[in-house]
Image 1: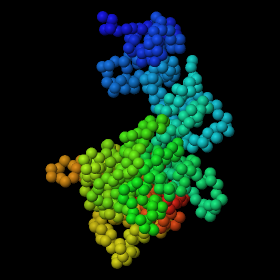
Image 2 (image 1 turned 90 degrees about the horizontal axis):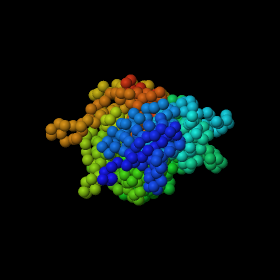
Image 3 (image 1 turned 135 degrees about the horizontal axis):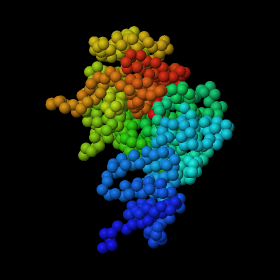
Image 4 (image 1 turned 180 degrees about the vertical axis):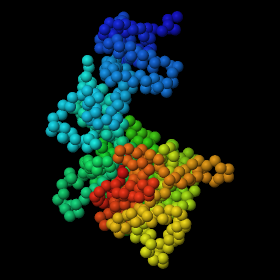
Length: 152
Length: 432
């Protein structure tokens, strides 16, 4: 009977690699869920903004969190290990989660970024996130005056 | 290759909302311009806790020039960093002329001549109204000396919350489960309310003169002037009441101020002893004066080793301190342990503690807190501020002098900051 058959979707990365996923897992991404509900699913679904390396990781997370047999604490344990990745990968994952509108992955990644920043000085944050300081000397002075807790 | 500065604004906002302390948030917004623009989207700074304790100094009141002082300057409150001794200024008109006391999670509570009691977050300047002073059940019998407008500075002694009053750090939704217990009134009894309630409700107590409250392991505990510890039971059919769980420690008496604090997972009872002319404690006091009973009690304590230590501490005090009406000379600490003895009347027993390990206690006009040692916080010390609010008026310039860092190991006290910051209403306090 068709109702007991798991519906599958094919997702295609920007570099043309195809991944088969269960529809029930994939609809955690609202972008995909909307396509399914509007019956606009093409075969495969092209994801122009996500390369294969990142898409594979997204699918790994997606399938883990769709597993009904896992408890919340088991999922949390998985998350802790999942986010132990190079910084640049985290950035790519965030952008992918945003593009796919995958709230749960987004929250885990954003929390990870916030945790990384714990206890870093402003200079350290700039260095580790590879961000250029675009304040002028004057502006930085004003920022320091406004945010007295930041520069201790 | 994507760059972190390419992050769309809505993702930056989500990351900013995951930050858990003020220090991280201000660092975040100071990184670069696009990160700073998050604050304009959030519209308000978040009401976050602070990572490190700071001292919130008293209001600067230029009594000579009150008429002409700039309104802006009068609203500035200074926060002092313990490590660098730098002070940082925040605009805080909401605290002007009001008594401020620490409420934990980065909040203060304030009370003023308008008799309103508010939670105030100095960083976000968010305020949450609690039921006003006149809704407290047991008011003074009205006479000239005790009109509410005269006594607001001493009517409410302490307020402790069961959790952060906000559900989510940024969204300003109130946490409806937040229960708030306070010590108030002529007899310093216990009362409670919940966020959103319009009145306070008494907690039935068998004693009076409570001195501290703490929320520990899901319950509120309080200690009275004798040192008896109670737990608050909100499930009793007859209404909320306090149940005695531990007897008063024998090494203390009513003249020592009591505190309750959680440290390293345990509940600690701390007694603070003071000396000074205002307390009739001085050795020179005539035996026939009021202090007589107290002298006897002191005699009991004399039998212990501790008196020598107290004497030593007194000698270490500076001359100015000894002139003061009151000054702190030391602390005792006990740990409450569950008592499984057959036939014991109490659920807990007290064991004296000589070391706090790597923790430091912060006591005063704040929710008693234990903090792990770090670059700016010494282990095994008690950081205290002047919370002897009933005697502030008797000190020249106001209270605020009785503050310092007590070392549990060698029983010495040192200053925690140079300079003077005094007030009759709201001297320096720990902002934690």
